[in-house]
Amino acid sequence: MSILMILIILFFWLMLIFYSVLTIAGVIQRLTKNEIITLDHYPSVAVLIPAHNEGVVIKDTLNAMVKLDYPGELTVYVLDDNSQDDTAEITREFSSVFSKIRYIKVPPGKPTGKSRVLNYGLSVTKSDYFLVYDADNQPNRDAVIHLVHAAETTDNSAGAVGYVRTVNANQNLLTRMIAIEFQVFQLLMQSGRWKLFKAGSLAGTNMLLKRTILEEAGGYDPYALAEDAELTVRIAAMGKTLPVVHKAQTWEQEPEDIRIFIKQRTRWLTGNLYLLEKSFSEISYWKGKTFIYSLQHILTYMIFVILLLISNIWFIGGLLGMSVPYFDIPLLFIWFLSYVVYTSQVISALALEKVITPFNLFVGLIMYFTYAQLFLVLLLRSAGQYFKSKLTKKTITWDKTKRFKKDENL
Image (tube, rainbow, N blue to C red; front, side):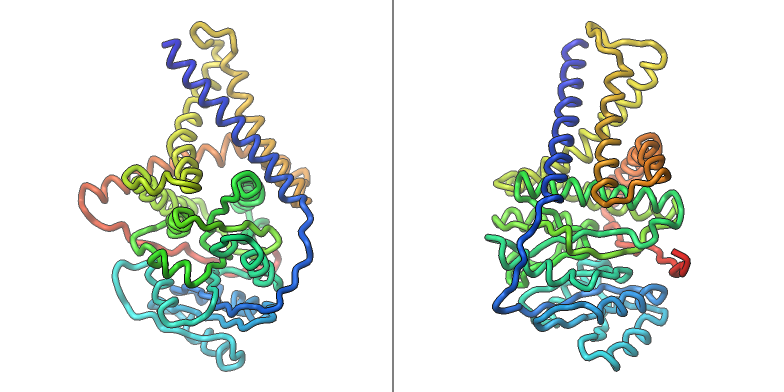
């Protein structure tokens, strides 16, 4: 029993130290001033927007696309995946006015999902780079320039990764927590990994990639529900890097309803379980920088959830006055340290974004007790779906997150 407790506490402390170091590195990276860059030649860029019944949001997205400022050739392709609403009509109206907007009808096929649509988009376009945006995204005017500058000036790069922000953060408590989560795990964790290991991760949107690199990698995996995470590992296995560019920002809509949030995150986690399984069966996932990503998945989807559960047990045990066998450290104190690390990451992100308000600070202080605990439910739900699909030998289908009409008061 004592040996088991020593191992648990050791893992616990290692996780605390690791995430603390990432936080500090992320703050340093975020505060580093970048040099002003001008390229002699700007490569061509194809913006790919997978779209399935996006009539509610596609107009705002295309309004943002036509405002993109880029000195080189830039063409925006809306890849219509069997939409039954007015997505096609709205896109065709834009394409009739703006020459850089193109409407592409994607033929039906299996398996359904974003990966298959992107593979088709790549097959019918020609450009040096392609840039993926989800259909609810509104990138800043200078987003493409920052991404291309980073990709063209970083040694051995496969592209570049931007920062995703929440356009409806003020809608309710859930969207506020999602916005803060993105600030922590993209602003701090992503930046920290890039600072320490030169290892950026694709975010599914606002990500620029060299066409030749993806062709060499064999395109997107059509069975991957978390296509961004899966492709990140394959790119790392090729010895390529993905610089993180916090100045390249896009704004996207996040779930405003807890049921939609759970459905979306279950898909994300199921996709990452698929990647976790691949990491245990393919040695290439542990070579070079792929080791960082595979280790990250094990820490996040195995060790973290175990320690989260243990920390909850410690919290309850501490309140009841229990103590660790053969140790004088109070259980409540050990749990408190994990809470401090988590909350310090949240507050650091709020400070960097200059959005520390009494309400945001309150939300940050309660997120460990509320938002973080949802991870246990989500992982259990996604694991159930994943193992069921294995037993029944049925492919888990990709599903789109429900969009909401824009609130003009936000």
